[in-house]
Image (cartoon, rainbow, N blue to C red):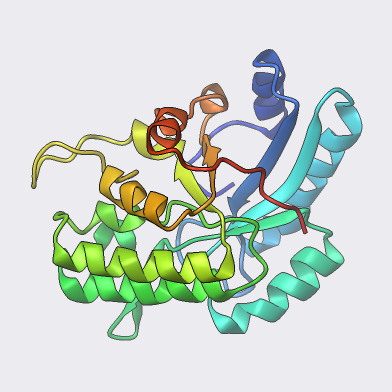
Amino acid sequence: RCGHAEGSVSAYVDAARKCNITHLGFSDHVPLPDNRWNIRMPYSELPLYVRDINQAQEKYTDIEIYLGAECDFSSELLTYFEDELIGEYQFDYLIGGVHFIQTDGEWLNCYHAENNKRSLITYTDNLLEVIACDLFSFIVHPDLFGVFYDSWDDNARSCSKEILKAASSKNRIFEINGSGYRKKIRSSKGMRRPYPLNQFWEMAAEYDIPVTINSDAHRPEDINNFGDGFLLADKLELKIVDPPFI
């Protein structure tokens, strides 16, 4: 329903069952009452999204299915998350991250942000707000700044340190994102993925950040595609944990 994915709820469930997955969480990009940002299902579709997943929960008895949403955060949305998503619609979990940064009063998709220190600092400040919020089961692709910031330099290390210190103090779980392994290789500053960034996760290991490995499937056939997430976690001796539900 976000506009950049494909497949029905049942198609994802069927794909998961074929892979012998026993627990499956849906976390489409959260719809918002003011329909801000452009990678979200329309707010009018929220009841339909909930209905589809509730029907799947009733239909499939051999797999646990969870209702969730992937959320950018702004303080004025807190009541909506608590009262409507968690309260009225009984979401099982919310996950938080940054896909948009605010620049000169406008929200920019991270994929369109400028490659400069200012954008990196803004991204970091936004992510620190997400980390500070207690609603999220885990923090998605915390190294997404790699989609716009090309260099692994002192600026990247400094911002990563701020992010990791905040996460450590709140005992947050970070996601190693399988979808990042399916992105096109970037070549502007050497051949690399936009994310996951190995250097970021090497720093995460120093802070003992617990991690979850997520396929972030946008197509049913990617439901069991975690890239090299498990290999990365094993190499760096990162602690893999099961995220909590609300």
